[in-house]
Image 1: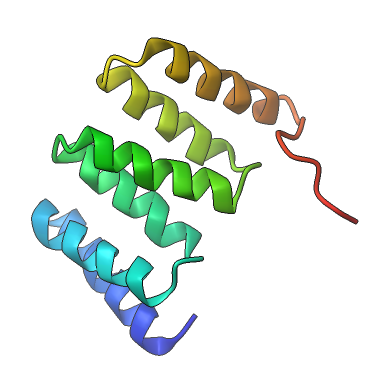
Image 2: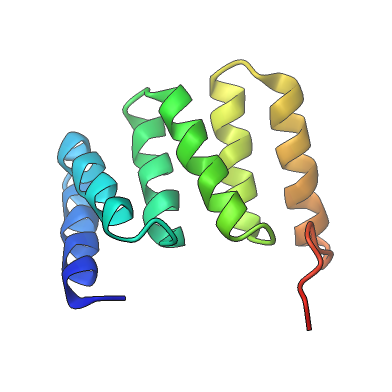
Length: 113
C-alpha cells in the first residue's frame, strides 16, 4: 500500500470514528479510486455507505469486497446485513450461508496452491 493510500485510509477511519460519515465515505471512495484492489477500502466503504442509508451503493461495494476476498467471513456477514436492510432476503440468506461455511472452516472459493 502506498503512503498516500495509507494516510487517506487512516483519515477516513478517523472521520468514521468521530461520526463524520459523509467525509469518511468520500475518503473511502478516494481510496478505492487509487487502488481498485484494496479490499479494506471496499469493505470500509460498504459499511460507511450502509450506515448512511445508501444501501444499493453499499451492496455494490460489499460485493466488490467479496469478489476480492471470497473467503472473508466478515465481508460475507456484512453483505448479508446490507441485503437484510435493503429487504433482499434471499440474497441475505445466500450471503449468510457463505459466512456460515467460512465460520465452520470451509471455503467459498478454493484457493490455488
